[in-house]
Image 1: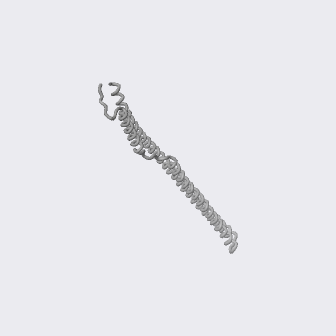
Image 2: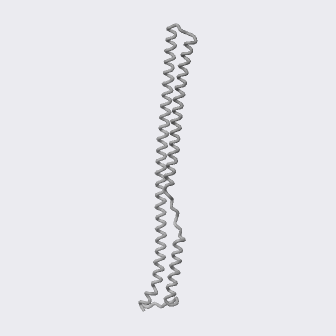
Image 3: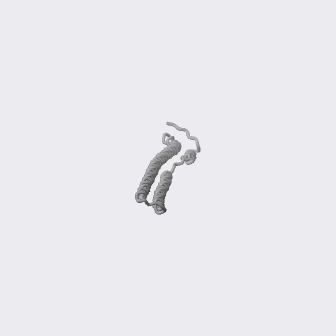
Length: 186
């Protein structure tokens, strides 16, 4: 009789075990999704911080290039003024005046202008290159963030289906045992 009662409990115990397994499996899936999403968030923060640091480096480089270009322009103006002053003084000491002196002074102005234009163009090319680098940094950060998949929350539907299946299986097992109702004696 005791054996028969234990045999009748087997479907119930199997059903309870299946339900427990489905609930534990669902909880494990939730934990795995939470951990994956935390990893995604840490990766995104790290990529964003790396991009911010790179942006700051590029901005500093742009400022340094602009300062260097400004200094070169200033030195060009000073050199050109000295050259013009020397030419005026030499022409005055020699008693030379007229179109030839004016042409020499105009040549110094032309050289000064071309040098300043060259400095400005070089700075603008460097600046544009660094801005392109910043865009590349943005794209790399975006790619790094997108390389880690965010987890979606697990569906309880799978666990529910397993629970319903185990309940149905348990009821079917109990029905096979003797028509549905059994008396248990210990």
